[in-house]
Image (tube, rainbow, N blue to C red):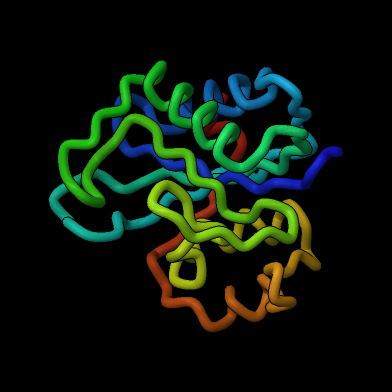
Length: 165
């Protein structure tokens, strides 16, 4: 059975828009997975320490028959292929891939929380989700559009397509 999954993408090192574009290609080639759509990319201030470059973020809509933890393993593998290092919490990174929504599932264990724990507070994740599917809701029925209206502003700026490959 295929499940609709929404993945958040972020980068602020080594040509972030190009990092995201390469990540989208990698996600399109995951086993048992189909890329449905890709959002535009957005720039925003970093969450956490401000002594780092602005982030570029986006999201993709996938359909997959992978289980949540299998998908998480695949995403972490893609991050590693992009040179991901976890040097400090909310610090700079070449690539960050987060499972934002996994069908109608709600999970919370030592490795994975779905829907993403901080989704409600991240305009750079909510807006790309709305770009992908305007009527999207959380598993509890909360509309993403409502969360976006209530979300703190993080200086979100839509990048023109010419700014990324």
